Image 1 (cartoon, rainbow, N blue to C red):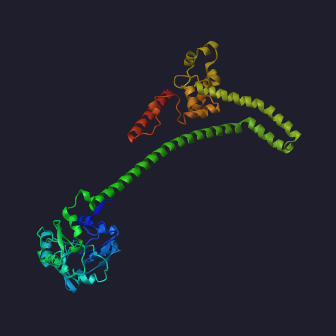
Image 2: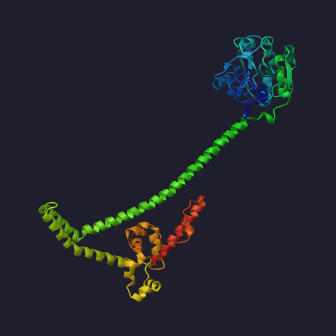
Length: 457
């Protein structure tokens, strides 16, 4: 698993290289500052380690309380003399110091404002009184007060495996470790590594760790900076959101196609419903219906259901209704003849020229088309294809309706196609992009406008 480095100068990478064999270690961080940004201990905390974070500035201490609930967080300063300590809080930075000259320099050179505060102070020995486990590393970053911190711990009784301390003046490459390093050397600690900011020392009891510090952080440490990892995580999240959005869009497009199909079916059903309503209105307005209704009322009064008298009356009604039925059928045929004859889709001469058997039989081409030709797949003219219409719209074929009659009465309003056109105009595969979809739509619209213009002529 790739190691995520939070520390400013890869200090945690070096420490992890030396201590990764420890399953749940213990650390002490003097001058902890932010619990995440530039933190030396954050990566260890994420791997189950715990320890003590010491931070005298309340702003950073509050953040530690939130991010490190499993650690002991102390809002004190560490010094060789317990009591209270004057501190210069360089606001919104990790540069707070007990050295006034450093605070003035930050103000003049960087514009960082500071204020003088008083904080409680303890020795490191007093803080560690209740600690009965090994201290695997002690990190010290106190902006010029490293000597006082090191002087506050008895290294004869407590020996952290690794000690790292800031060894340069704040925001400078000028080293200033001479005044406190001697205290570590006198207790047997061995200097093993300088990273440009911090000096690392190994306990005399853990000399086996010395070779680990022979080289700086490198490819073989398999690490990534927190900033890079955080950016990549956000990019991955956005990529996932984009993928989900594309999937949702594709799903929506499929639903749009399905909706268009359902609308077509709905239009077809509405046409059929309108036809049925028209037929019903025609029946109910006919003399036959009125006579039948009158007879039914008489029948109900004089003839009980399933009686011999009812059977006789039923037969009588059928006999009376028969001529009216023939009259109604005759009217329907006459209407259909007029509808086809006046349309732009029936061409008498064309029909005879393309059906020589009809011409030889000297049959009326219009009657032949209505009664037989349309069902046989014969075209009434160049602008309508009977066979294609029946094969394309199975509902028309199943209903037994002459294809041109259906088109003139219902199909045209339902936007059905009277004859086949080029395949590309009816490509039902889903378009890859909106531009292609609009091209298909414009071609379809132009085709129908040309047909409509031709029909009106």
